[in-house]
Image (tube, rainbow over all chains, first blue to last red; front, side):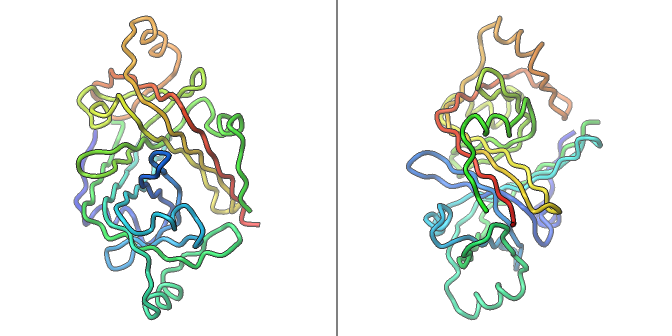
Length: 130
Length: 130
């Protein structure tokens, strides 16, 4: 059984934060890379290094996906966000994100770039095996 | 700490099967959708319904991503495959995939289309928080 959660339910599924994947076009084809994300004011915020591949594509159209599947229960969900990414540059906004959004990347090193994804389209699927 | 596993290690990380995401361009932007996959003969095979969005993009360039993160241990990996997808049409090949690759999609309904992704590029990341 597959059902299509509403945008409001999609936000509920995404939760306040988690691990998802950002996808964008590159000269070598589509890149799909895991990212920590936080949801704030109906936008997604991710944090990355200023020299990363994501940073090089931080202004423009992107897609974002998150999912969770429970193999034992045979159920799961996925949410696909299509939208525009842009670097967060405004100092007050940056300070607020650093303090409030709780994004702490794992690997050591500089992760000073915050990227905000403004959803243009939000679609979800919820799947149950029975 | 981030390291870059070799292509052989990427295949080991992907394992014989699992859940990943296929990504491709559509008129509405990039789609990123979860799929069950199996690895066979250094290609990825996924199974979908003949009327699905994936089926409509089953011949052409795609990317595929799989990852696993253990939040408690603070470690994880991701693998990104860029390649060409094509429908499996040859009857002997189809029979073999049906019998051997163990792909059983969860939602009820027809899933008669097998799509093979032939990797052109395989890159991975292994991340440890310490």
